[in-house]
Image (cartoon, rainbow, N blue to C red; front, side, top):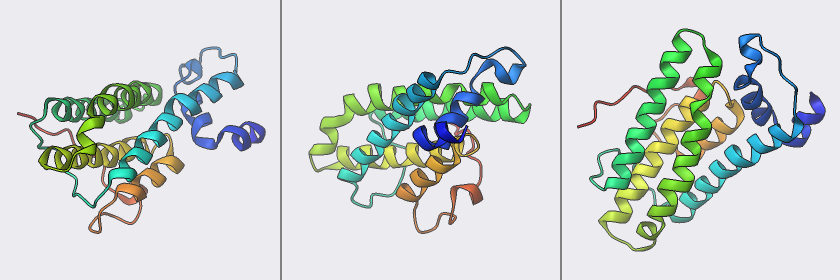
Length: 181
């Protein structure tokens, strides 16, 4: 395992193992290529989203109340992720808690960010709403992914945390499902 961890990182291996049928006591033919895919499709994509955020970050406080349809959609998606992960963790179904993460990361990167790119480039209230929403989503995502990908979750949390936040993602409170209007 140390060779795989040294090559792809512990979080990629953890995500692969936690989302595998192994947790249901089923057979698993370990695939190093699948760990590499977890790294590239999830951590790599998420890192690209974070770097994009950092490019435009101007200290905008996080917020989830934007009226833009894309912002409302991604907030609803992260809300659904929190709900699914919470339900699964509460009944100790680790694989079910982790499986929604890759789809959410894909939605964040491929759907939300690609369609919102131009909003970040023009100063104004729409840019501020996009930055606030993205910061909120990344902050929430870091807390949801902390049990399964603690190292990257900490890196992400530190990149988007506010002064009033806890010192570590591992000390922060689990996110709640928001009542959305």
